[in-house]
Amino acid sequence: MLSVPMNDAIGRRTMKCVIVVKLSRLISFYIRRRCFIAFSIISIFLLILQGILFSSSDKRPQANDRKILESKITNILHSGSLPAAANRAVRVENLLFDKNIAQSVTDSNEKFVAVVLVMAAKRERAIRNHLDQLIKLRPSAVQFPIVISQDGDDQAVMEAISSFTSEEKKITFIHHKGRAELPSYLDSGSKNYFRIARHYKWALDEVFFKMKYEMAIITEDDLDLADDFFSYFAALKPILLADETIWCISAWNDNGGANITDRKHGEKLYRTDFFPGLGWMLTAQLWNQLSANWPEMYWDDWMRRQDVRKERVCIRPEVSRTSHNNDLAGKGSSGGLYKKYLASIRLPEIAIDFSKLDLSYLIKSNYDSFLNQEISGAVVLSTDSFLNKTFSGSGPFFVTYKTPREYRRLGKSVGLMLDIRSGMPRTAYYGIVTFMYCSERFYAVPEKLNLSAPNFGLQPSSDYYNEKWDKMTRYLEFQETYCTPTKYNGKCDPKDPDLIAWFAKKRLSKRLKHWGEMIIN
Image (tube, rainbow, N blue to C red):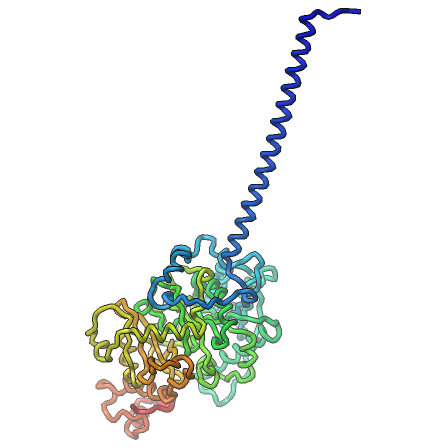
């Protein structure tokens, strides 16, 4: 048997110990590395989960699970700043859209908000421009499917629409084919209004009764859209569903000229008795009420009738979220109106994420309470002081008007739209019209509105409108148009034989007839 020298035995034992130590260290390192990797993975997962939970809490709640808060954000309406508490929680810059504009509207479940019904007829370039904007701005095809309705058989328009339709993108084309013979009693000026009303009824019947949509946003091919167009409607849908006194959400401000609106605070929203249209949202429930009685023409003025409106209001913005693209629309039905008013109504420079705002101040009880308080504390001005600008200090201010002529003087001095429909000035709420003037907030208030009454907002708003004002205002416009030193110098009475003879001599008898009934005032 061979014997191992002592030194060799020690060396071998030492080598074994070294190997064991190295193996132990290697195993320990491997275990620690695996634990670190596992810990890192778990940590990353928890961080992601936390981010999802927090970000989802910032998304716009849907109609079926949103709770309408009772607190009022009153300063959003008129002061130009958020309330102190809201200012701490939601800084102004957080109300603005970031580059990922769609993410502010879209939630993880992508629940349906409203179908977008686009009305088109003969303007090929206009419909292409409008659809390009809708598709670019739309956050989700699931939330906002698009239905395009064409009236008539214009081939270029048909081909333009067909190039956009896609089942995958939820863009559908419906066609109101052909134009049935028009009633013989229509004059040339009324035929287009008849076609428009008939097309609206047919298209709305299609989306609500046949396609079974529950909510629709109606747009027209000559409209341009604000970047926050979809955020606006998505955030206001819960308000529309929560308050039965609200029957529509409109993206349009009839008095939206840049010089009479607070463009630094595009988040401000208002209630109005006057139906605005021009990009508006309604429910299937409302259409069930309207469809059977839909008028042959002038459907928008019909919506403004007190017996149709039934004390209900629309929500409208301080700064319009739609604007007319007159380069693509042409003259259209608005005629010369565009040059005077529509050109100054432009889209906002800053997009707002409306999902970050508490909009419960638009609920009637909240809104009326603040409006009463706001106007009651305003500085009172006479009509002459207002017109002569003999006022000073900071607003808000309010000035009363008694007659259509007085309201017209006020409106012309600042650039309000002057026409009256069903006794209502445009944008009026209980007869109150608000606007910016000389960088201050103003309220034009009807004289008979008693702001000190404890029941303000409880009485019908229709009590403050006199439908005779329509005919009285029409006369004032007629007077300004024809009864001038350079035209007609006689008695300014549309029924006066001399004035009738003057129109006949000028071959304008049909034009005189089109003015309709007027009341001298």
